[in-house]
Length: 323
Image (cartoon, rainbow, N blue to C red; front, side, top):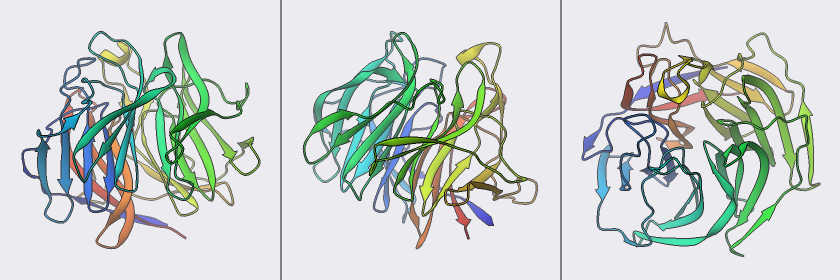
C-alpha cells in the first residue's frame, strides 16, 4: 500500500498557525474552529471555511445564534450539512461539555445540550449511516477518561454506551474512527504513549481488544490524525515521546502514515517522508478530517505543533492507496 501527499494553496483570510483545533468537511468545504497559538491560550471563536476547489479561506464573521466561546482541545464532526462541536478547554483551563451545532447553509450556531462529562483532547467521529456522533475519552475534570457516548442527531439525545473495561486504559489524544461498521479506538496517552487497539460493535453493544500485526506497526503515540476510510483506519503523525514540559513544550513527533486493515488486524506503512517532497513532516495536535478531493477519498490535515514547538499553518491532503 502507498499514498500521496499534496500541499494545498491557501488564499483568502485563513485561521493562521494553530494547534489543538478542529476541522471537518461538508462536501467540498472544510470548517475549522478553535485552537491555540500560545500554549493553553485559545486563539479565537471564529468559524473559518476553506473551499477545497478554489483553495480559498473565508472567515465567517457574520454567524448568528449561540456562538461558542474560544476553546482548545475541541472536536468537530459533520452529519449532512450540519457541523457538531463538543467540549474543549476554555481560557481559564476549565474542561467543557456543551454540544453545539453549526448549520452551514444559514451559518447559525445553536447550543443543543450539555453532553457527557466535561473534557478536552478527546476524540469525536460521525457515522453518516446511523446519523450518530460518537465521543470517546479525553482529559476530564478528575483525570483521563475511557467512556464512549453517542449523540443521535434525529432524536437530539445522548446515550452512554457500555464501558470498554480496564483493558482499555483511560486516555487523552486517542484515535477514533468508524470502519467496517464498528467504532475503533486506536492508541492515545494514558500516562505513557499507548499502542493498543479496541473496537466497539454497535450491533452487539460489545467491546473487543484487537491484536494487531505487521512489520510496519506504528510505535506508541497520541494526538495524531485518524480516520476511517473503507475497512481501514488511517493514521498520521502524532506525539511518540512527550515533552518534559507537558503541554507547554514540544515532544518528539512522527512523520509517518499507516493503515490498519480492520478485517485482518494488520498494519501497513503508507508513505515515506524522505521520498515525498510534498510530505508535511513530523507534527502532532493537528486538525484533521476524512473526505474527498478530486474524486479521491483521503485525509485532510491542517496545522498542528512542530518539533520546534512552533505552530503550523499549512494544509495538506493525503490520498492513500489501500488494498
